[in-house]
Amino acid sequence: MSGKFSPAQRELYDIVLASQEAAVATTAPGRHFMEPHEAALKVLAHGMLDTGLLDLNQVGGLEDVIANQSYAQFYMHRTGHWLGMDVHDCGDYREPGIYVRPGEGVPEHYWHIGIRIEDDAVVTPQGCELISRDMPVKADEIEALMRG
Image 1: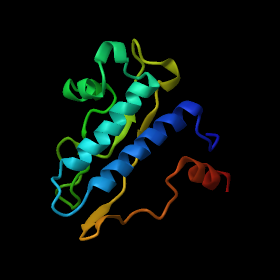
Image 2: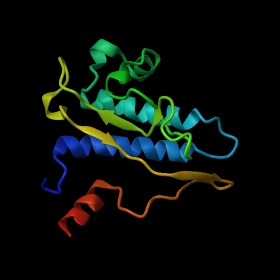
Image 3: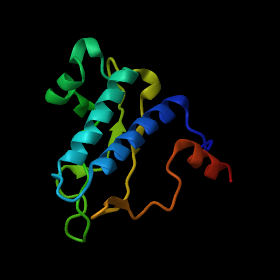
């Protein structure tokens, strides 16, 4: 490990981080629990189209990708899950991520990259508070930490 993102890793990492940020921004009292997932999914799907993980000519635009679940090749679960001894990771809920396996039509420079950013959060009257965020999360900050 070099302690540095490859260009492909950084590109996908930034998409996943943006999707998490979209989910956090959408989490608030009175909002439906699916709204953060939908916000994250839009960012992830848009990123998959922008990077060529999904071919616009084959899967259509953003709305088509979401409606047809074309994103599921690289993001096969939902965003977020409950916390507690009996509920962590139950069902198809996790954190936003992109997981790339080698395959026909998949750009090779993305093969074998898997990224998931997970934090614990609590919903307060002011919105969503990340309670596990004592570590750097932006790619530049992570690389700086790795350099020591």
